[in-house]
Structure formats: structure tokens, C-alpha cells
Image (cartoon, rainbow, N blue to C red; front, side, top):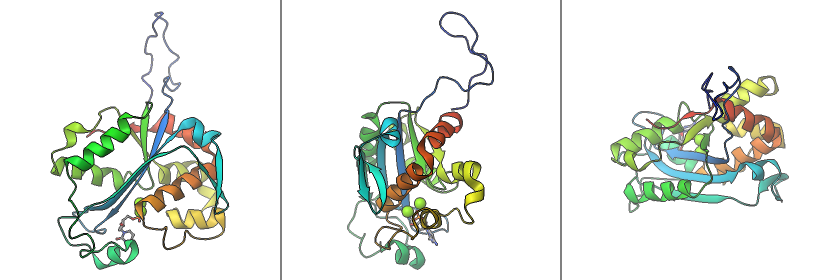
Length: 233
Ligand code: DCM
Ligand code: MG
Ligand code: MG
């Protein structure tokens, strides 16, 4: 988080200006949305959250999975959502979520938001939502759905957010020609995520975690400690 410069510590000494404050994010909640498409209003068709402790990203028990390693200890929530507008055919094609298949599902409502909040409340703080292209896509869409459904007051005010696309552009720009999630995965693991994984919210969340571990979690997590912003509206 951006440092509060010159803040006084409990013994009255001034902290050194310019050095990031004592914030060390303890839980990273990888997060992805599937939506009705790229045209506005963009509405959620699926949401996935996977909360992972810092130490699990750095040294956690590793289970081999497709040549990568994943933390064994994760708290996850994935849910489909019926949007209040039509799903664009292109979005339906890549996500395999259709107007027809979601027709009897619940909309983005208080019960879903409370499920998310309960998952977030169980994590050790500071907590940071992490999404790929989150600044331009997932974070504003979630904020809009919270506002529209009048559930924004339930959402914890102290949650942070960070965008892995921004982090990777900042730290590893030279390594990649494209910064899309499938292209980064392809470069690092020799193949794109399979179609049954790509553009599913949970599949994209898992891909993000694999990428962070593979590129170097230590450096990426420290970047987020320094640069994460407040999620609250
Ligand atoms: N999307 C789209 N067309 C694309 C890429 C994405 O309409 N070529 C929309 C639909 C997806 C959403 O963006 O549900 C999120 O993309 P992603 O699966 O990459 O998270
Ligand atoms: Mg996404
Ligand atoms: Mg996705």
C-alpha cells in the first residue's frame, strides 16, 4: 500500500520517509469475472475467488499439476450469475455460459455478496484482491455490480486490490510480447491453458496463481505490498 510518509511510530520516532509503510499483505485473493461481453454495461456471468496465504505462495506445500505447482491450502468460491442483459455471442462462445444455461440462475444479489464477504472475513489481513487486467476490467465491474445491487455497504472497506497485468508489465516487460493471461501461460509453460480451463472464472484464477509462482512470487508480492490500492469505492 502507498506509504504514509513521515508517520510517527508508537515510541514517537518518525518513520523514514520514502520507505513503504509496515504493510505486508497476508492474504492474496485471486479473483476473476466472466461477463456478458466487452460492451457496456458489462455484467457478471461468473465469479471466482481463491484466497491464498502469503506463505503458501512462497513456500506452501506443492502439488504437481500440469507441470506447475499450486498451493495446497486455498479457500475458494465460484458462482454463476444470471445477468440482467443478454450475453454477447462472442462472450457466450468463449465462456460457454449462455442466456439459456443461466436462465434459472440467481442474479448478482445480497446472498452472493454475503458469501464473498464471509470468505474475505475469514482471511488474515491485510487482504488484497488480485485480478489480471483488474484495474480496467474486473475491479470496476465488481464495484458497479455492488452499487447496482445496493450491497456495497456489506463489502469490507479495508480490502486492497492489485492487477497482475500491471505488475508483470512493470517487472517482466521484456519477457513477453502479449500480456494476456493465455499468452503469458503459453510463454511460461509451453502451451495455452486448455479450452475447458481458459475463460472459466476458476480456471483463470488458477492460471494466475501458476503464473505468479512461476515468475517469482517473492518479487510480485513485494510489488503488491508497495503498490496495492484500496478497493473501496
Ligand atoms: N471477453 C470477450 N471477448 C474476448 C475476451 C473477453 O467478450 N475476446 C469478455 C467475456 C469474458 C470476460 O471478457 O467473460 C472476461 O475475460 P477473461 O475470460 O479473459 O477473464
Ligand atoms: Mg479475466
Ligand atoms: Mg476469465
